[in-house]
Every structure is written in C-alpha cells, then in structure tokens.
Image (tube, rainbow, N blue to C red; front, top):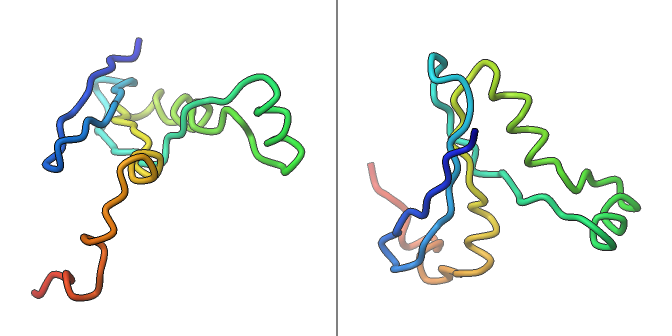
Length: 94
C-alpha cells in the first residue's frame, strides 16, 4: 500500500510524494518517479521506445527490498520553474 502526501516547499509550492515498500528495508529517495501515462499519450510514448509506466515499474522493482520515497521532482520544476536559483552565482561555497 502506498502512502501519499503533499510536502510544502520553501517557495510555497506543494510536492506530491509517495512512500511504499518494505518497512524493514533502508529508505531510498527516488526523485525521478514520473506518473504513469495511459491512452493515446501512452501509445505515442511507446512509438519513441519509452515505457509510459516506467516510474511505477521502477518503484515496484525496488519496493521488495527497500522503502521507496518517490516523487516527480523534474515534473515539479517544470510546473514551478526556479530560473533565479539554478545559476552559477548561487553555487554553494565549501
């Protein structure tokens, strides 16, 4: 069973996250978990060799051994761009 929740980020946006898998396993973060696509959009992706359910399959393959915290960070950044934050002058100095 997947637990779903929304996490409030510092920019005021919300990121949907899910947690699934083996509670005895280590928790891993999977920030590349795309939502599955169905119908004509899925058929179009298949023509390009893309699995329209890749995120779901990836999570399922890991969830037997791990507890997987999954979210679509790339999709979130496309919906809520941060052009002023990802610049060379904001590079963290160590």
